[in-house]
Length: 539
Ligand SMILES: [Zn+2]
Image (cartoon, rainbow, N blue to C red):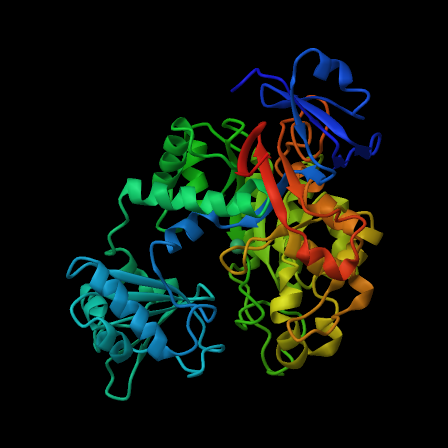
């Protein structure tokens, strides 16, 4: 790290510090802010020989902190064929992509794909083994559905997994069979795919590291300087991934700061070593314990208190029985560990609150663990009030409004419940701080777009969904800066432009606080700086 002194002048610096909300100049040395003020106030440093950078009147914000996305899984996906509707309109195009990848790789090598969405592809159906056999008859092919709950395998992959007409159905999953009784290629839930997944080769560490670097780059282009890696242990990437992160850091290739959220079974092993949240460095830290208590509303796997709009007999299921969740929550609250629990439906949110209230009675006084409910899509006012009482942070996936809002209204939730998804204004009015996220690779990682959605609540079809839940740009920016820093217990070292904090900041083409709300999405990230070092753009 350089001890070289740099002074940035002529900027519009949104500090997110209530005592000094605006500044035009900042000095950076040894990776931290040394001074923040007006050009005039920092002139002595310039006269003393500091390097001067003219911001040209551009806006500076604290570096964006993305508190729930899957950066390492996204990197892993980049090694696979993109089967998402964004890349291919129909199954024939997907077959062409698979054929092309087969031509580029060794004979017999596995091909994996990601992002297939039967509801948005022109063919409106699932893939089957013969689609994939036609594209690559000589090698195993395995495609992940966008939901993370469904998979497709060709004949070679089914054979490697030992899945035949005679294979019994696994608990918690289904091997779908065709009319002849043979596996059709569609596998429901990880339990059904496990025999194949466990036999799939992993990419070499160097291949994976190169993919990670690309993913990190992508985050920097979006103005992100810190992120939570939201489910380490997913897709077979557990301790090896932590090792890989450590190597990237040692090699100076981990320029984004990562807070590692780790799936509960893996965390149990970390505890055995005497480690826990907060252990690590300024670039790589152990973070929260991750659990799931339901799935997604659009996948009809969220647990609701009232039935789905389009299925009046169906409420969705909780993942864990209440007593199991109670026990695991009590364990981690007792240890004083932060938890991040996934819940979209109000019944899953309720289940988490019941477990947390119970743990709070058993271990009174543990109020600053900053547990997060991840997505928290359908929280009621009463649930928000109880979250506040317990110090639980809603980590809202506000992009739901844009990507699924129309379908939530017409299909899954109906108009009344749809307009209240991601109730940011209600949360704000109750004085509870919240954060926002993209859940990459579920939606693109783009804090500017997520803030735009929080401010405008526009759906894909251009409707305003629940205008009463819109918030101001300042509140949206808080969610991606100061309040996100609070989620990793790092509010003293990041989240605002202030003396002594890490020099992580983002340069924007326009002022997000004074921009017309409908133009926020057009603001470009022009540069991203981590620890005083420019990691994206020219500065
Ligand atoms: Zn996620």
